[in-house]
Image (tube, rainbow, N blue to C red; front, top):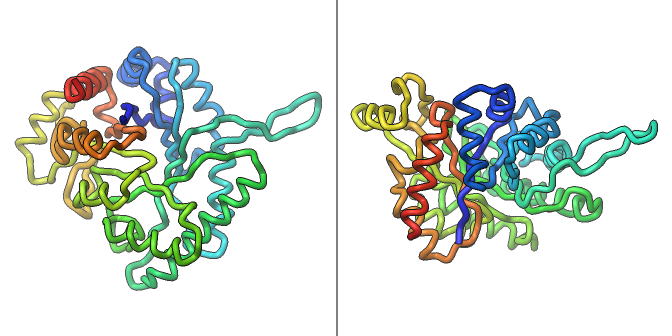
Length: 308
């Protein structure tokens, strides 16, 4: 059975720690309900994870999983170096001890999620890139096993396509192709998936292709042209206007809306996880305008009602 969690960013934590009312309310409501969180780490803030963990602890938040920046080089020869650096920066910290400097554990997440790299659409030898990605994951896993310092599974998450780029993980067919490549290389063990139902064009087909996800991300989506529905969402959740929201220009949709609105249907999504006996974290991702105590209350109550 899935357990509900919320994604929080480094900015959320720093603003909450400074007493910013909306963010503090958002984080406090999560903590009061005893819900774990997933820490979203920005690409330019890897070195601040220790401060983030301390701030989360001061707010009584339990960081269970981590969402790292996308891999930029996961499909080239040195991709494992970048991946290992990401993992070390998020899980280990330098500490002074009696004049010496040691690398110690800072965070031990149950799961680390990241997006695979994107590449130019006119340079799309996809099988070669899939092989590089699998080899990257394999080299990283072998290194982590040998070093015994920052273990824990790493999961690839499907993305919302942006601009004139190609991606290795957006469809159910991509899941099948990656597994075929991993099988050919004898490294099926390195593949784990975080299934983002909001980003998937056919979410339940994608879920079936993954089978047993390591994690599920959930949020509502609405087309940009659905102005009446967007106005209603903003009114319901106390957002002044859709102008405060970010639209995914490449697909003409708003993503990371509260999962109780838009598509996929919240009720159907939770039912789909239960029907398939999926047991993994269910992480809610929200645009900044919706990160309020009221939103947490509405989503948590809706989740409880669907499950009752």
